[in-house]
Image 1 (tube, helix red, strand yellow):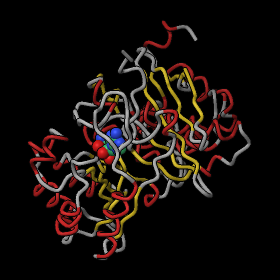
Image 2 (cartoon, rainbow, N blue to C red):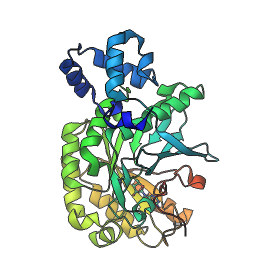
Image 3 (cartoon, protein in one colour):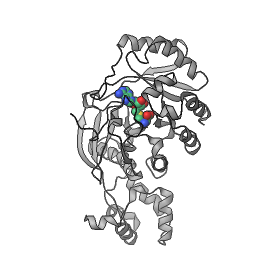
Image 4 (cartoon, rainbow, N blue to C red):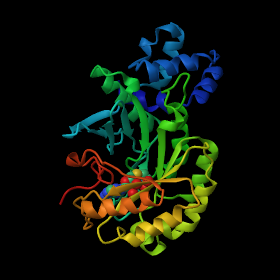
Length: 356
Ligand code: SAH
């Protein structure tokens, strides 16, 4: 397709179903067509409007004149020894993002990016090193999921096996709130969209407090908080956002977060050798989280080229975990997958950071 033509056209993946209904009505078309179009896009993996045979020729032409429908440009794909796959996508403006497809026992989880880079500047995270370039569009968020399922189809794997999504890729999801919410509406559209159950979708945040409450009101996704320390001094050193929203404010927002009776908020806690991995830290963590329906995900620090931090010894990690378990906390250590291809937590950088 010629670029000149693309310019005045819109990406159909940017449209929520509501917006598409509105668009169709403005064009004098019937609103139920939006559901049909969504099924082609998100369930039948259409590559063109031409394929959408039940729409009628006229509507198909109308769509073709106004929208484009493409896949993300896959620049590179790496496969880990544990079969985790990392996709490097090149966006239209030349920026890059990464998406990670993680095989679990009977399904797949996709780790999705929401920004090119990140502005949060967390000291342990490689994505932060490149700074923030821009927010991803709704289409760019959605296409990561749509295309991952498309790759499964090509490998003769049932696409709905990709049933879980974690917004734990590059970027701070709550800093791109409006696009996140629109993307979620497509992802969790169980009639015509991608059919992800709310309980299988998790949004992880560094702690953008005002948006946490809003997320609770606007959606019923799972919430994960990157806590990583038990006192403000340490947390502010690691995560500058803590200066703006300290631990107490963060936990208050969590306590107010609306969720289903049996749900829990996940607290991610990176274990960094000599920094936040002591017995006292574990005890403080138990105390801090006592008022909240919480579960703890310990993430042994994933080492990377831009950080002097180290991962604690396995013995230390186990001891930390045991303290939580002994005090009836729901807790586990996260098995970060894809470490050998830099696909584990905190290792995503796309082409933001160039190796020295
Ligand atoms: N900005 C969001 C989404 C990113 S999620 C957030 O902060 O939650 C990425 C997760 O990986 C976060 O829980 C973060 O604390 C963790 N992480 C970042 N760098 C890491 C590293 N080097 N090792 C282990 N975990 C890391």
